[in-house]
Length: 369
Image (cartoon, rainbow, N blue to C red; front, side, top):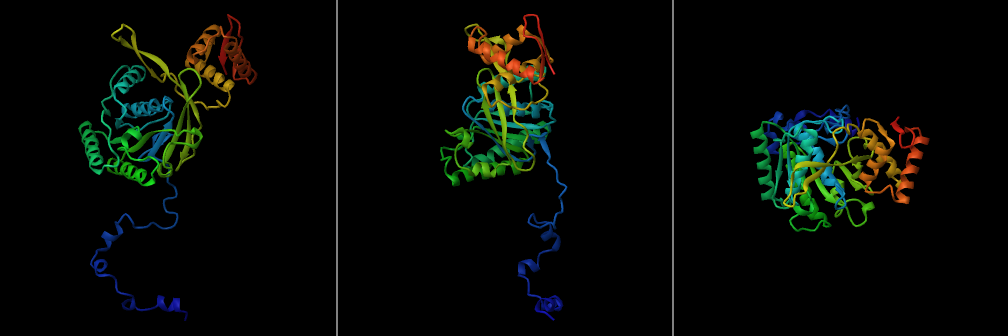
């Protein structure tokens, strides 16, 4: 009999004695440990539990980054408002609940943005489930992180809803003066984000800046990207108020297509001290679907703007109205020969590809196909 088989047939009492602490432990206590394994491919049928269908997983950790002024905070706030109000985001289902937004760079502008979002998407009604904190939290300070967790849980309990999302905007303002390039400092911040996630059951989203070389991703230690479950890059498009959102990491699901998102100017119905209208930007309500971003050239940017404008107007517009609106959104002028030619070429390209139909005459009708 081989040595292996011999060991299999040894009497029970011949087995090595277990340590006393294990001998005294009850089997159910051991088997309930979080370290208890499952066998083989048990649980293979797992599917992603989405907070925002197709874009943000529930109970996860993610990063949204971009250059200053790229509209990255607008994008994250758009998600936050949708989740807190329970309103679908661009046709994608959301799980509603409490959202805690740490506006570490100043909550003032966020109040206007939230008001603009509510005017467009929520019939002007406020969003009680959206809490905006005015103070930065030092993610490397365990005491501050514990206090934030207590505040989040207390607010959710008062509201009687689950915590769905915690936003940290920006990482730089919540880094306590430590070095973003230092892996150990970044690791401490990541551990704190995990603590918040585990304690609240929420998805934690960090808003971060791009490095000097935007093609190399977010600024600082690569430990941040390695730790996150999803990552999005936000890049403002040339001219106008639109940006491209590209998924650069999706750990547990297929990466969604890049999308171009437009922001419209919203008049908040009040005036400043000089009598000028108080305005902000918000995604239009009738933009109920996403479309793939193909803005690889300047012509692509023009074409995307044309398609977006037509979609915002139910797919049909008079040529002159379309022309003027596209120029307005892009900050260009029809009187400029270069801008006039760029729009003309983009229109001709879309017509040639059968994406739109119509005539560029004064009385012509343009139709999105």
